[in-house]
Image 1 (tube, rainbow, N blue to C red):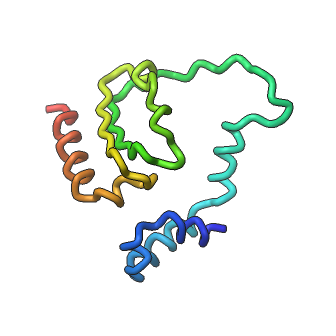
Image 2: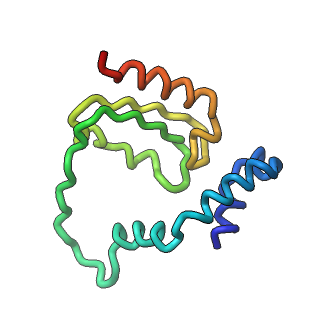
Length: 126
């Protein structure tokens, strides 16, 4: 199952680069697939599907930098709605129109690297 996930989600450049593929494969194999699935099991309801009052999440008390591919198959762009209501500090959102993949840092590595460096410099106390 993990092999299929790796094969389907890896950008083409990774699939052709054996060394990179092996590094990520090794890292993912150290991850617990059971734990990954448990996260989703805790966040999706089971039958019977009855209305439950939502729990109020805590506010994030730190500055947030978020990258989001607007064509992400797993986290839809509509999921960004009202995000700012849950963040007590500043929120920097950088969107990538037309980017389908879930791992923006792999689809635009140089841009995201530079954006992180600049964002961290801006948020580092002096």
